Image (cartoon, rainbow, N blue to C red):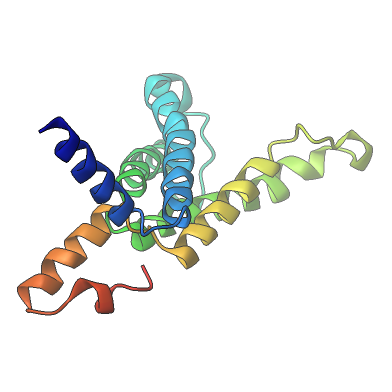
Length: 170
C-alpha cells in the first residue's frame, strides 16, 4: 500500500513539474522574490510610526499615504506572487513601485553624492534587481506549480477540453 502511495506522489510531483526543472526554477524565483520583497513590507509595518513622516512622498501624495501603499504592495503582491495567484498582474505594482523608488534614488539622493562616492553598496542597485526579477516573472509566467495553473486546469476541464493542449505554454 505504501509503495503505491509513494509511486502516486512521485507521479503527481513529476506531472505537476512538467517533467522539467523550468517549473521548479519559476517556483523558486517566485518564492525568493516574494520572501525578499515581503521582508521590506514587514519591516515597514513594524517601523510604521517612525517612518510615517520620513518616508519619501511621491506623485503629490503625503508620505504616510505612500508608506501605506508601499506596505500593501509589498505584502499583498508578495503573497500573490509566492502562491502564483494572478501572477502576471501581481508583479506589475511591485515593478512600478521599484521604478518609482529608483527614480527617487537617482533624482533625490544621488545628486548629493559625488561620483567618486558611489559604491556597490548604494541603494540604487536593489530596485533594479527587483525590476529585473519582476520582468522575468512577467515574461516567463508562474509555471505549472502555481494557483494560476491549477485554476486554469479547473476552468478548462469545466469546458470539456484537455488541459494538455490548452496549457502547454504555461
